[in-house]
Length: 308
Image (cartoon, rainbow, N blue to C red; front, side, top):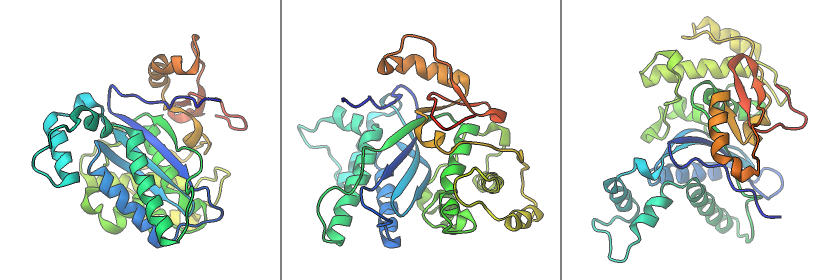
């Protein structure tokens, strides 16, 4: 059976949630391996036209939340600058396929491919192995800016808490909140452009603190999938006067953050659906599935065993 074409929006900046798992059993990625993957993410994020919004590198898989920019947003001078970063050359050689290079640097598939292939070469050489390291092709879904995106980022940053590795999300070095808090966002790897106009905040530090509160309040709720943040920890944080109070009731289904296809408001889904319905072989209007009712978040796909 042929693969279904990947959902992509190539005419405007678009946020994607990427998930990829190893084909190996157990938890083969050690701390030093996670560190190497983080360095690869840094390297290729400086070359491609991408903003990294969040990540979590676990023992057998990783999450990336990125905003890819279309070719129409990229100038020829931008491309030359990235060429120099990659090759260390001041002049582009004759015969170089400029347009093809530009297209590649705006491609989600090429971006993830460079990270995964680079890690495979490292891992196989280090552990003296051959063969496939990754399982099926990586998953990706389109995500709307704003509350949908912040909910997704919280889901990603809570991976280590749900797995019982840490009690607080920022204690885990290989996730975006941990990177913000532990390194002070070293090398400006992460963007905090979440589209949260409701926060009315433009200072990066204050945005991170408000996002941290959101993650803690979300992590205290049992979504039925793994551990939660201890109530004592939440109470202690509340006594420190979080800068923003968020709704106590927050419900989501974890599978929608990995398998929804497209996630966002009804208006956003209607717009995207019109652009991609040809890939789905659909000529009709589609009813979208409510995922988080209080926040008006919907899914393009209806998943068995999950509800709104």
